[in-house]
Image (cartoon, rainbow, N blue to C red; front, top):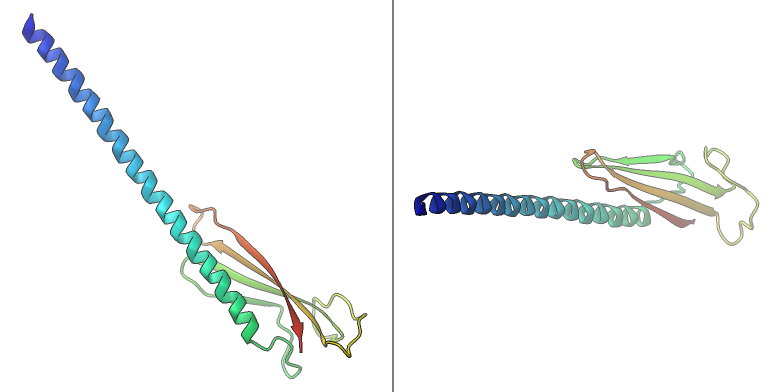
Length: 136
């Protein structure tokens, strides 16, 4: 009788420890997945900041060149796209919204939309930032 109870207790404890081990492994995998999502989110934020720095350093309104409509930045993990629209008197820009402003103050305004999306469908990270730059 004692042997059957000890065998039953042993089976119960082994199954309990197995379930506990499975639970620990699942929590570990969830933690690693969450860490990967956080890492990709911070990487996307860094791409957003570097895109804003890029906008501040380039001459968007160079009259000797064509107007910029879109700019696509190549990356391994993200699709980075910058879309330009303008409020200016320059007529060769495709997304020129208006030409009714005082050009003694400024040549116009560029509205830049930055879109950052992951190339993988596994992570749902989508960032958008609108930047307004005065054309000089």
